[in-house]
Length: 458
Ligand SMILES: Nc1nc2c(ncn2[C@@H]2O[C@H](COP(=O)(O)OP(=O)(O)OP(=O)(O)O)[C@@H](O)[C@H]2O)c(=O)[nH]1
Ligand SMILES: [Mg+2]
Image (cartoon, rainbow, N blue to C red; front, top):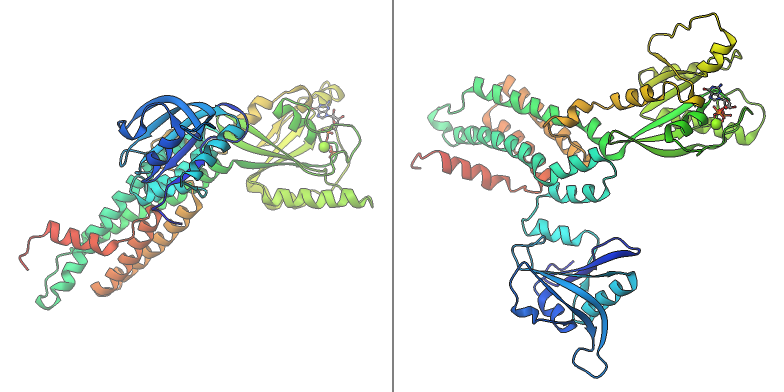
């Protein structure tokens, strides 16, 4: 990839739309747009201005042909998304027209952009750090309110700021240690060990909090998978349909109706749940297809974030569902067909078991409570608070490495290892922190702090 050339791409989604945007970025953006634009002379226009006109081929020749009526926006470097000159051509949203505009730009010397290249240039030009660049991708992919909010917060630099604070604390720490090394012959101790221990402890707990938030962050970004498991005829497909409010899965009173798992998305208060209706589980009846379905149901139960174990209150047949105890901590037991049970036992009062919920999927009873319960599985207090939530696996991995290094530093201090060892561990730690935001020039920062803060005339 060459960051010196000018790139072009359609910036809007493919398919038909009222408006579509072709974006150019690079030194030649305005030079490339000028000969295909009939209107004002673009090279004479100010930054952040809009110009109405036409995109044409063969401008000024007898064969001149209008491609589209457009509005062109000009953003001059460095005040643009990429930090380069950017021209955006807003035309009508037909992919044929937009492709023709791109081709016209390519004919003038632009290169087709690679995926993510505009944002990559923004990063290279210091417009965004890595976490912010990643947030752009997350924001585009966001399909729930919570995912959108966390991505937006990250894009605005919320996460980067948290990391910056951690980094600064560590750099302070490193500066003190390294200073001591410089003066080792003189037997001075600039770094008060007790204070250092406190500082490391603080950094550790902040790191820990970020690591902990990933479970929630992951749920926000990718949604939670919910497997609906139970014996045949328990009402699993009925429950799926009721939750979705549509007749998605086939329901019948024939045991073994659902053969293969069906996955559907459900948004509860801005959190995405991926519901998986599975084949009912029973001992083999010698039906190979059903047996395969049952194996899949068990695999789905193992993989799911949450299991809804549906139990038919009116069913007295015994099937081995003991294996489900292995997943007790992610299982919600649901007693279904309460309406039917009530008809069969008109004089009995149902005593629900502890931690079990009673529903009647067919008539929608207990469903609002079930949705509430699912939503509670996500620590939603956290979403509303100002705490940063880590949503990116790369960041999570790097933070785990940071935590490892911090533990090493703590051990080294406990064992009274010399400053050299501490300094090494701190550098590693800073390296991993820096890898998250994309700034890994650690040495210069340490030096900067030493010489910026201490005036020792050496
Ligand atoms: N009375 C009553 N009947 C229900 C309820 N929920 C489901 N049923 C009935 O139970 C039968 C089985 O429902 P399904 O949803 O197909 O059951 P399933 O668990 O998906 O069954 P398989 O796909 O065969 O494993 C159907 O006749 C439903 O109408 C309920 O809450 N009350
Ligand atoms: Mg079914």
